[in-house]
Amino acid sequence: LIGAEAIIRTLVAGGVDTCFVNPGTTEIHLVAVLDRLTETRCILALFEGVITGAADGYARMAEKPAWTLLHLGPGFANGLANLHNASRAQIPMINVVGQHATYHIRRDTPLTADIEGLARPYSKWLRTICSAAEAGFDVAEAICASQRMPGNIATLIVPSDVSWSEGGAVATIPASTKAPRPATETVERIAGLLRSGVKTAILLGGNTLYGKGLQAAGQVAQATGAKLLAPYPLTRLERGAGTPDVERVHYILEAAKEQLKEFRQMILVGTVAPVAYFAYPNKDSTLTGPECAIHTLAGVGEDCAGAMQDLVEALPMPVNPQHAVANIVQRRPMPSGKITTAGLADAISALMPENTIVVDESMTSGRELMPSTKLAPRHDWLGNTGGAIGIAMPLALGAAVACPERQVLCLSADGSGMYTVQALWTMARESLRIVTVIFANRVYGVLKREFSFLGTGPIGPRAADMFDICRPDLDWVMLARGMGVPASRVTSLEEFSNALINAFQSGGPSLIEVLL
Ligand SMILES: Cc1ncc(C[n+]2csc(CCOP(=O)(O)OP(=O)(O)O)c2C)c(N)n1
Image 1 (cartoon, rainbow, N blue to C red):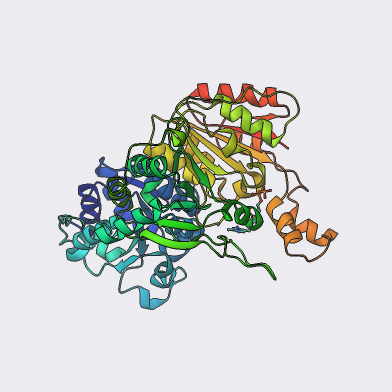
Image 2 (cartoon, rainbow, N blue to C red):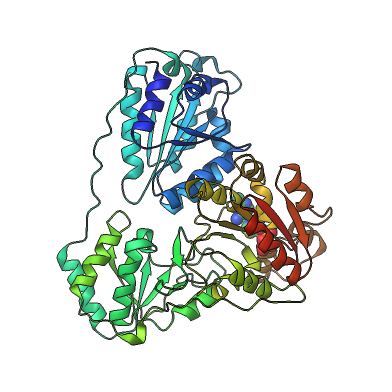
């Protein structure tokens, strides 16, 4: 086999069969192999930031890696902001980045770049493949590394002569090592703390925010009355009627401090103690109160869902009915009249189908969304984990590829949406079931707010001009239609509800621009 075929066949053998791609000359041999091997689904995107965000969304929902195929240093660098977000999401991902032929690199041609240097900060595992003979083994190792708890980014750099040379073989994927579970003493110590009657919060991370891990967390909360919390940077939270109540830590420093001040102990599971996103002059960025003791049940690399199950066993049951899970769906009533962010949230609560995957980058327009949908039919909520904006549409794209049977609802602010707007084209091309809602407030609202928080005085016209994204106004309907996505603009809550009903019924991609 040539190296390119060994790489792709090994990926397929490891169950990594979905590729988000934007190729160039150095990847043509890989593309030629993909042309023949139909086991891989290849999805073209017209910007690498869409690719890395889509691979993240795919992994969050499929719970296995997708691979990206990227062109040299510049192609890889275009994907870095969403790779940063992915590295914070702790999901598995495999990047395959083309490189010049080994003997060509020293000629320092225009596209030559230090790809390893670019990749290192965001790759838990990184290797340049040296020969076709080693290609399969390197891929097998990358697959293993990506799936080690809690999920990692593995980057393979593939010189084009490795791709085209003979001598490759498909490698067997080594059995992945199981993540360690916390020691029995740790579980018992935490169980003791939970029995103490002190006001307790459990901050959940990783796989304790959905599925079996969340169920176990719910049992612990029901038995002990502990409050379940999720960090503000949210990879994936399962919520809605029938799921344990998990409150997200607020974004705004003062609101988060207020929310957390009642707790005297916080138990961490697969995450770290909450801190503010930014520092502000004369403000402490710790979010928990001074009397709150921090304890860890399981660290980031441990089997968190398993740890939760161990904790359930270590605690006295039965369940206290006072802390029972709310099982009945309670949608908000259909709103009407002038557009407000609360009304939009209520319409979404009233209309979202069961099992929707909500991708949320609604920024300042989304404050009411989580409260309104708290008891909507069961759904998953995906957020921005690394704070680099421009993730919503790529994440939605990847989630829809992973779960074609589910409705995806992509909620994006307009400024954030413009970073990776090319995702719309791929949504149309792949006929994905994604409804994108654009909150068009025509401003970088967060930054205006931050300006006031930082106490720099009133915003002058030159500063305001760096935050206003009107002049000219963006036309999202034209942008979407230009990329093949049906779109409409709404100016009242009735229009929004009708557009949402039609969009959900269409079964394909569509976009609704909401003028705020
Ligand atoms: C990659 C990246 N560039 C810049 C920023 C800084 N930033 C934070 S919020 C924001 C603007 C957000 O505006 P928009 O998405 O329209 O939402 P709004 O605040 O208006 O609700 C910017 C530019 C960032 N977080 N990430």
